[in-house]
Image (cartoon, rainbow, N blue to C red):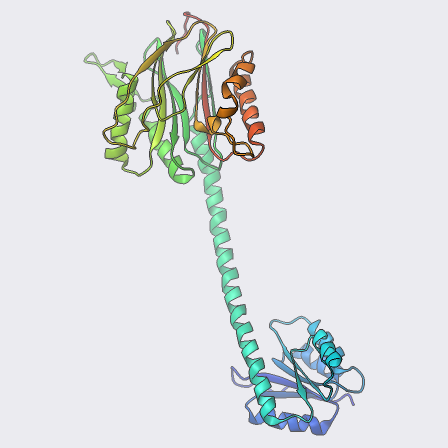
Length: 422
């Protein structure tokens, strides 16, 4: 018989809605009475087909369905019910006189949550309903938490999108700190590379004129990665300004109002003091600074924790310079020493960060241990940007994957004493 009682008007909030499905009107009446007395909102259907129509109009919380009915059986109804779209879970109890394990397994495979043996005992009915209530309550709570989590993740995603946009702009600004990546002085040329491992990084390279025949080159590597390191490099770039000599701490003003270069060791000492007194951060940095006389090829340097500068002779042979030195901002009482070398025509000076020397292969070995100088010697015929590009490609091939540290490098190539300083 394909009859059903239409859903009742909405009951007070919190009352569970139970749909009773049985082709016996007497059985439906008994169950509906027991349920109503227990405080449930009740709907009835005399067939599975009628019950599906009700489920399309409403979403009952719990279904009590007879197993054996004319037309669609209880397990078939359960499968059809499970296939329907719902906003929340529906708890399904099959009413049956079957107790064989095979039949129970069939009911579970159809999607049923529990079983009640007919004739139904009132105490057992309430106990099974309470069990279903617990399941539904946990499901509702989990749904609410998932909704909250989804909303939170959406908010975080929006925030992260904003951060990514800001970082993309910050990358452009950081790259703009290097106004020139190449300068030809006639008798010498400078070429620079800056490649952050992320959106922004903690490496910085640059150069500035000291006077009509001398230039200063510097490489800086701030500890850590990301925004903090990038902000630090921006601050340091202002201390080594090429356009504002009065702000450049590598320069000192004479009594005549002219600017003269500090000794490299003095620059490292001044910068170390500034990190402790003005910047006041737990971040430290490594520094390589070279004061180069374009007329003579004389180079005075200071190395403060940065990788050793490399002097490459005209025949390609490489020589590491310097003794290391303490990083800037690590010890307030740190002292630094100036050391010197002279470049002959056809020789070049290479300053690089540890993103190159400590590039790591998949087996954990470092590029420095695999003969970085040999790679540089193999590239002796390359000049300027071609040399930088070829060495960067070599580093990438050695790492065989994403680079985990920022990379920066300056190559100064010296041709002889004739000079043109702008």
